[in-house]
Amino acid sequence: MALMFPVVMGITNVTIVAIIWVGGHEISDGTVEIGALSAMISYVMQIMMSVMMASFLAMMAPRATVCAERIGEVLATETSVVRPAEPVGFAGDPATVEFRDAQFRYPGADSAVLDGMTFRVEPGTTTAIIGSTGSGKTTLIGLVPRLIDVTDGAVLVGGTDIRTLDPDALRAEIGLVPQRAYLFSGTVASNVRYGKPDATDDEVWEALRIAQADEFVRAMPQGLDTPIAQGGTTVSGGQRQRLAIARASSADPRSTCSTTRSRRSTWRPMRA
Ligand SMILES: Nc1ncnc2c1ncn2[C@@H]1O[C@H](COP(=O)(O)OP(=O)(O)OP(=O)(O)O)[C@@H](O)[C@H]1O
Ligand SMILES: [Mg+2]
Image (cartoon, rainbow, N blue to C red; front, side, top):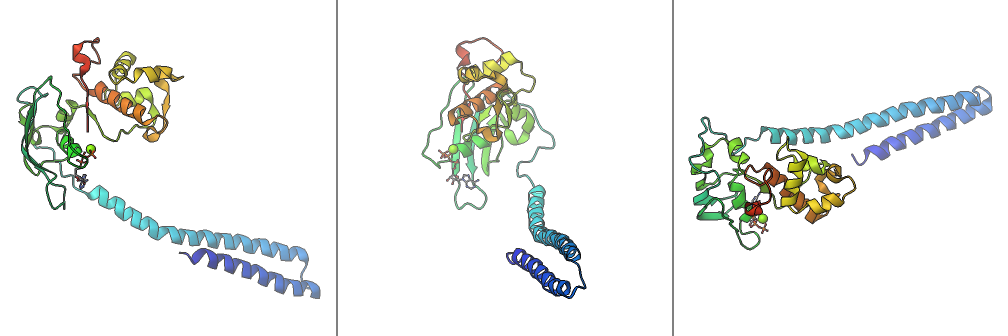
C-alpha cells in the first residue's frame, strides 16, 4: 500500500517523459506537429488518472473488508442481558431496591468487582455509595437498571428479581445520570426531552430547575432552542452534567416535574 502511490506516480511521469522524448525527435523530423504531441500528453494523463483511482480502490478494498468483518462481529454479538419469556410485574413499590448477596465479575476478570453485596434502599430515602476510585460504584449502579447482570445473588426492584421483570418497565422507573454525561446533537430542549418526548416547555423548565440548570439556560441567547453539538462539546463540563441531570429528572415519573416546588422536590438522581 505504501508503494502503490509512488509507483503509480513514477509510471505516469516516466510515460510523459517518454512521450516528450520520442515526440520531440519526431517534431524535429517534421513527422508530428506540436499540437498532436500535447493532445497525446493530455490523453495519457487522463488514462493515468483513472489508473491512479483504480489503485486507490484496490487500497481501500482490504481495509473495508476488515471493517465489515468487525461490524459483523458486533452485530452478531448475543446480548448477555436477556428479556424474560414471561415477564412479571413489581411485587411492591418500585422505588425499593434490594441487593441480596449480589456478586459481579467482569468477563475474563480474575476476581469479582462486587461480592456479597446485601443492602436495602427504602422509598423516599437518599443513599450515597462511597468508595475509592475503581471500587465498583459505577458497576453497582449498572446492576440496578440491568445494564449488566449479577453473576451470583440477586438484585430486586419493587420486591421482584429484576431478571424476571420486563426491562422496559424496569427502566421506566429509573432516572440515571451517568458518570460521563453525554449530550446528543440537537437543542437544550431536545436533550432534556429524551426522558419524556412529549414534555411541555413548562415541564422542561421544571426539570432544568431541579437540575439547577435553568439559570444558565435562561442566559443563553436562544434559551431552550440553543443548539448543542454532538457530545455536548459546546457547553462546559458542569453544564453538561446539569443538563444530563435535567434529562434524567424529566424521565423519572416520581420527580417533581409536574408539581410545584415542595419539600419532596429534593429528589436527586444518583450520579454513578
Ligand atoms: N468494562 C469493564 N471490563 C472489565 N473491568 C472493568 C470494566 N469496567 C470497570 N472495570 C473494573 O471494575 C472495577 C470497578 O470499576 P467501576 O467503574 O465500577 O469503579 P468506580 O467505583 O465507579 O470508580 P470511579 O470512582 O473511578 O468512578 C475497576 O477496577 C475497573 O478496572
Ligand atoms: Mg464510577
